Amino acid sequence: MSRDKILAALQQNQPELSALPSIPVFERDQELSLTEKFKAMAEGIGSKVYLVSSLQEVQEQMNVDFADEKRIVSTVASLVSAEIPAFELNADPHSYADVDVAIFEPLLAIAENSAVWITEDRMGVRALPFITQHIVMLVNSHILVPDMHAAYERIGRTDYGFGSFIAGPSKTADIEQSLVLGAHGPRSMTVFLINEV
Image (cartoon, rainbow, N blue to C red; front, top):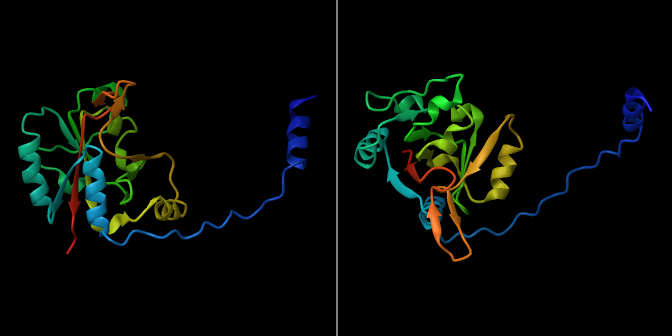
């Protein structure tokens, strides 16, 4: 059977389109604010979270936390300075092998598990969030959503190529329950939760 005949047969035998199932609205924990819940979850999985009200505070804290790091890059234009150069796209991905700290601004942050959603256009290059030694996320409070249902509701209405949920530093554990941070990716994750006023 020729390729064209096979493709024509497949075209004729497509299943009927059906509507997506409706997803029920689940009860949400109202005891904590989204900010408090996100912070508690993030710290519980090994991230460091700072509640800040300005980029100036972010810069000051980074000067303390990452004073000894040699190569810091920012994909966030508003957080570029003499100490923090802007990310520059290089055709050779190996040129990012020595990045110590990379700064990103995700599109969404999920309170129930402290994951952040970031798409390729905010990564600079796909590999960067996964090969840097330390990952920094600038999370504005207005992008917080309560759970993954709310996150997928928003993501489903947007157009993107590659995207990823990232939660906490890289970690792995063996059968003896020895937890190792930074085994396959960033050794630490710092989140600056910016409360917009």
